[in-house]
Amino acid sequence: QVQLVESGGGLVEAGGSLRLSCAASGTIFSINVMGWYRQAPGKQRELVASITNGGTTNYADSVKGRFTISRDNAKNTVYLQMNSLKPEDTAVYYCHADRLRSWSGFRDYWGQGTQVTVSS
Image 1 (cartoon, rainbow, N blue to C red):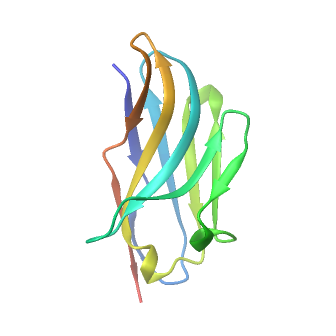
Image 2 (image 1 turned 120 degrees about the vertical axis):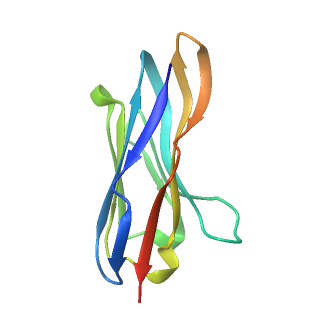
């Protein structure tokens, strides 16, 4: 059974840094795109950053220059290095795997979410 397990969230002061990790477990043959989304209270879930299996990255304008997404294909793990954090980055961050291929075929998966809180 495939699962995405996130870690690394927490409380940090404005200007600080956090690193999120998300490991996909189970029998996995391939993952097309891995990404991070976030959802703040009262707001819709939004894409933060994504990375293809070839290493092409995409960022939301609000995090460009501050966040860096990376991926270890051998470990089926994606990372999000978050620097210069702002209070408006406060949200629950979710890991997403697009077109993950396992014994169940191709489907998308979500992690359970990890809270990031940035104090001013």
